[in-house]
Length: 598
Image 1 (cartoon, helix red, strand yellow):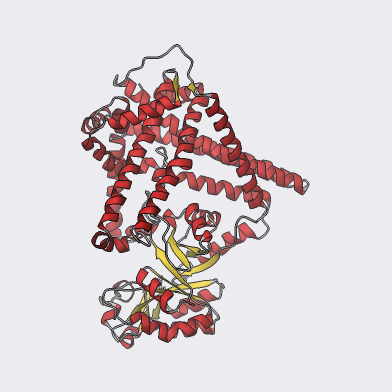
Image 2 (cartoon, helix red, strand yellow; image 1 turned 90 degrees about the horizontal axis):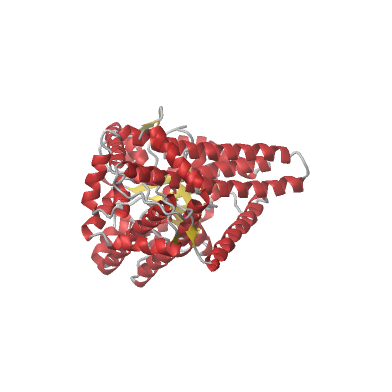
């Protein structure tokens, strides 16, 4: 079957029974988001609380393994349970879609039980293959294999930026990316074969490799067409509603406001429906592809395609849909009145804006302070003579050309060095000099305390003795990736405002920090809400694109750290300085599109 015929058949199958397909996906998502995901989050919290673990990060892996081995085992077991639930989810989806496609009359409970049995049919070795399989098909998992259970399976953007900024790593990364995408296409039928044909893991891998031989470009083209269709459908609805809102804004305010509330609700529902439709059509494409290979049966029932479920379940589903629409309308009204979101602090990352100087140097600080950021974020290291120098990298090679670390040189030696970046040059400053310059220009600082194993044992005590009162007087703040710094400051200098830097959102931490500085990639609404409930703030780093800035604003973070201060300030202005309903609708559409494209 040609690609064109296969796509036409998949789209036709969807539109012939779109109601049943969408009901299946909606019910599946409700089960996951309302029951399973909160349960997994609660179990994670119980494990951490019971084992007295304040946070999860790569910085405490060694401590966890050596000091909390029981907790590590419990977390591994929980991860395997989550993986099994992911397998169940896709089994539920594929079995349900197959049943609807072949006009088989099934109850949702029957599909759920059959999906559970499909998991039981797999051996342990087959299940273990499922782990690397998802690592390989991850590029497509965000497009079609959508699962709330996999929301945090992301590569942090700072890692990608680091790789792309190094030519060798960038080339290697591109090779790895292309290889993984190729393997993802070659193994694209593994999961359907395991679920629908009950093949063992190794057998499914071999079969998928055989079926996709000489069809790599065909599968890629099918995936692109389905994805582009969803994007076009979303953009068309967004643009249409935006044009409609432009006309409504010309009338009375009550009409414009009511129209905006309704249009936003329509857009939110439409976006989710398009995402669900793309998922179903993608699955149908795989299903018909297997039928073409005469792998799975195509026996049909005379009963029209439907999903059988009791009236009680029907009323419950209807009530949940009405509740979702009501909550969506209410949140839209609050958002449009400006009561939902608070204006985030604009924070300059390492004291620069759009490469206007050398990071962490006084000339860049002075230039950037004229743009009036809420804070300038900067970094300090301890020196050989137990002073503090302003520098981000542990090794000085990148900025100064000197292959030494800060702890290997005295402050006098360090401040003689010249740092070069972005076509500028400036002397490496001491913390005292940088702090003095900030005070002279009335610029508040967000000081990141960097640590290494070579730091002196009393480093933190000396920092507190020298700078606590001065930082308090200047209303400066501190954050650190080292939890010992955070806990030590809160214990010995409790009046200081201290934020704990987290590079990945595994689960919400339980600490005494005033705030959390979160890497943006895995930051979500749940984390922000939990922090605000605990009277803790959230700062997102490092947010450099308008789409990501909009995303962080919609998460209601308290501050955004960026390399592009001017762009951030303009984005904040667009969101909060008397925008029209049409412009808010457009921003909302951009945010929805950004959420579903991640």
